[in-house]
Every structure is written in structure tokens, then in C-alpha cells.
Length: 188
Image (cartoon, rainbow, N blue to C red; front, side, top):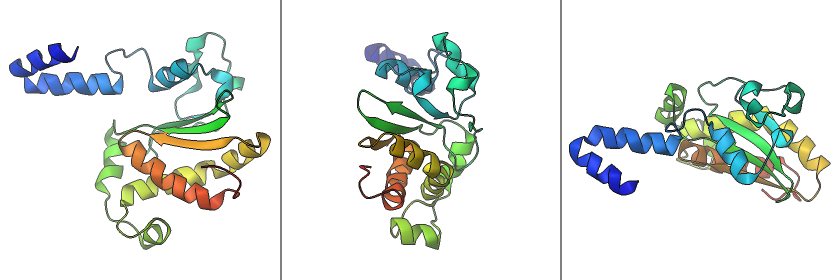
């Protein structure tokens, strides 16, 4: 595939960029969502999902999920709220918060907001990225209660926070904030 992309880049650099972007975003197979890619690879089902930013009908790909399998607090995309989901991985004994990288206009708003607030600098360090810090703060505010509840239900489980690109920056700041907010015995 990569060799074909190099040949195509000689003909059209824009086409190469578009093809690489589609591959990275999974758009070359539009009927498969990022959620499906992660859950299929990990063998996770709808019962593992605590929160998904996508509508519950997207999880019907398994053919056995019901709306009751998914937490009622789903949300829509907005600036400072990158697409994300939370799952319980029973095999790895972990609660996993997955944060997507840049894909849409709302994500671009988060990226261009570079100046941090004083509050963010106090909590996350001088010179932190303002948009990523705001996104992390929003996610922590939105999900801290749910994460506390689930980690109480599953003592000994760790909290894994992962992301790609924009999501990685947000995940890093969210980990710092949650490390301070959650009980000391919780591995973040």
C-alpha cells in the first residue's frame, strides 16, 4: 500500500495527502467507525461501553446490542470536547478512556486556542496548550463521577487514558487532572 501511495504522490501530492488522511482516519472504509476498530481489535462488546460520544445506533453493528447496553449520558460533538468513549476491559482489568485526534472543525477550534488560562497553568504547568487543557478539563468534569463509580465497582482496576494526536495531548492533561482527583490507590 505504501509503495502505491508513493507512486501516486508523484502524480498528485494532494491525492497522497488525502489518501494518507483517509487511511489514518479509517475513512477508506466509511462503514466502520473508530469505535468499531478499537472494540473489534480488543474483542470488546456493547456491554463494555460506559460512555460513547456516538449515537447508540452505531453500536448495533454487533447485532446484539440494545439501547439499554449503553449509558444514557451520550453527548454530541462540540469545541473542547474531542470525540471519545469509555470502556471496561475485563481481560486487562482496566477502565479505558479513548480520545480521538483531530478530524473536524470543532477539533480545530481546540487546536488554535493555544493560550492557557491562569487556572490551567496552575494545574497543568506553565506553557501548557490552552485548548488541550480546556478539553481535558471538560472531559474530567464530564466523567469524573462515572469514573469514580466504576473504579469503586471494580477495585484493583487501573484507569488507562489514551489518545492520538490532539487526543494524546488531551489524554496527558486529563491524566494529570484525574491523578489528583481520584483516590491515591487508583493507578492512572
